[in-house]
Length: 230
Image (cartoon, rainbow, N blue to C red; front, top):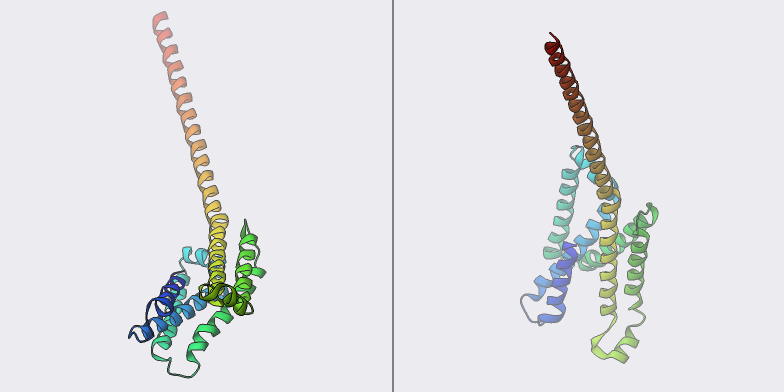
């Protein structure tokens, strides 16, 4: 989500706010390309490693999985950013970073969320992701119609970004639902079970204490009766 936010900020600066002659134009273009590539790479890496299913448990077990994945993400995203800022003079490098990573991530992430079992409301969020993808692609054949009827205000780029926003919202909700259903719910049930067990143990100890106190009182009463008889 962070890389996607950077992509939108950089795109706003390079496409809408800065003039073409600005010295910041190339910097914002490189930021846009690098952030787009990193967003796609991060999503496809998480899908390939199935981090959503096994990453949290592996990290909790202390086998170094979390550090390993963080290192891989730093190396991959660092390389993509370096190419975006100092490698754009290479022919087709910008297209390879901007479009290539997006296409590969769409294929891998789409296949991943379709093949793994859904929990909770995840199926609805999968539909939202694919609806956003269809909306993003629909802007290309409709570009001439949009420009003819709406002028410069809406074109295929507008529809493309709306579709991308739908995709990212769908993926965010998909991951959130996974965490709530598979992790928070299980953790909550374990906590309730532990509390119930502790309450039963406490009640048992209190019952034993009361029983011992009652036995002590009865014995004291018998001794007092014996002393009176004597």
